[in-house]
Length: 339
Image 1 (cartoon, rainbow, N blue to C red):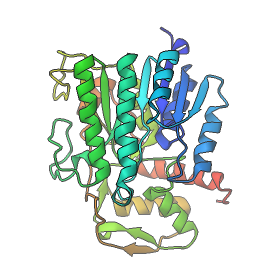
Image 2 (image 1 turned 180 degrees about the vertical axis):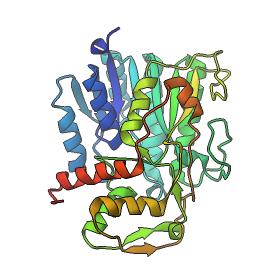
Image 3 (image 1 turned 30 degrees about the vertical axis):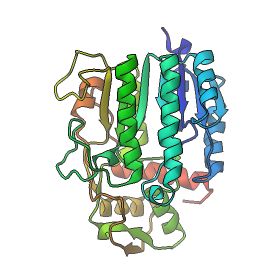
């Protein structure tokens, strides 16, 4: 089957990662059904602009709705019969989940359950679902491997994502749906979310305001450039899990065509180096406001990507300075700020 004849359903298509993935699939000739609720967790205009860009391609079909709408999801699966489904829609934000946990129950738990039910009725060839590096929680051994136990989440957001992994495994086991779960590691890049550190830091520095640096700068993150991550997702579409064929160090379930994968850069960066890269790209210094660790945060993340490499081959690894510069260039262009 050619890519031009393939249909993919991308939930969260107006979101940061969903937008980049949908754009790549459209560029490769896919027909893309983009489902997004355009919620107001952050600037709706930014989400609408992403969808407008996708809409320039005649292969894009936007649907503005929530994944909790079971009748709509059933109709989409039965009418469109997507061969590939990438479920990225979720209520994001570690700290926000402490303030409004019910939103996470509705979007991350109920929304995912309804999507699994729709996939049960009309199974796709491959269902790919977003999890998060936050599920590793209190683990201190690094790098994080997919086969590690993940029993001690540090935020309600992470807990809902761990629940998604378990829910997906049960459906994969019971109904034979091939499912790959992705644990994303601190994704950044152009069109990024305003609630994330890169966006907030750039905005604050340009406005000559101090930036809040948690844990007094003693933080490390496995920063992953969005286009590198999307490359991994695209390569994995045609690699659905198959029972009975585990690789070395595989997370493949013994009772289901289900696998969990890290997608990260594979090297942690010190937060201070991240800030320095922003300063370099902007050509100005940041005013630092050092603070204690925030509830729900972890001091470091680091992805073991050996399993991913076995499945996809080596992925691009954009250097932090280059990725940050790409974001700053986009930010200046989007908000008409001279460089």
